[in-house]
Image 1 (cartoon, rainbow, N blue to C red):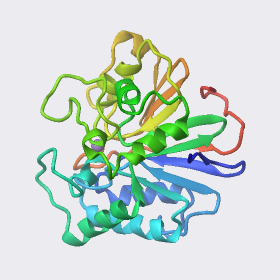
Image 2: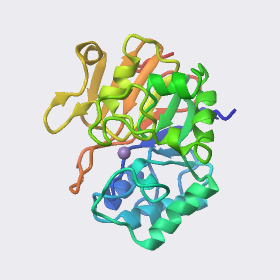
Image 3: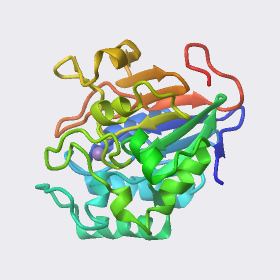
Image 4: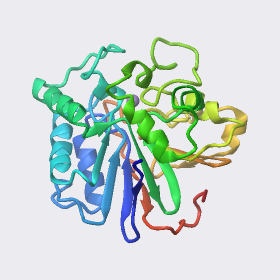
Length: 288
Ligand SMILES: [Mn+2]
């Protein structure tokens, strides 16, 4: 089973949805210490996980994919690339309509990442004494129980999700309320589940087997200033305005949402979710 341990002295940075905003990605990588305005090489103490949805919306999807491709080639062990629904748009039967198309060469790069396994659905990480499952949209309780068989171990969960990639795409890409205006589905898949009404809501009243970090959508509407959560979960939720993160702390772990919500316009204020390596839990976070 594959559990990625972030050793003492190293750090983890989980980067949320990029949405074709190459300048925003470069700026964040530079802030994390990547030289050459994010071109690299990655500093030796840095492990990057990007949650998918690199492309669409913003001005330069091709530039984002080219930049990430350089990191994946130069440091395949320290840039973990996850698949989002916008990448999946070019990998399989289309599940939604979208007005944009990335260039053919960019599609070829995405397909190569997917077939070679360099882009995957999930990763299990242990950092600062906390086990984290990172996926594009988050793992609902229904999917965890019905499709994965309720693994309590984070590495077993990631392995089970990743095993679906080329064997059972129908399960992996199971849509939820964000496709076709369906009602919320507490068993929506980890590429499509909505952060508030599906992922968080599905765990309400049930202990989390491990913590999670996800992108794709947010349990808080930053523009409207409103929650996509019921009262009980709202009590457990905390906002990080500077980073644009939503942290919902529940029995057994926490759900960390890192989608900055970039549209055609970039959000100026956002950050990666960072954790130090090693066994020490940083003050203020939820140990489990
Ligand atoms: Mn998405």
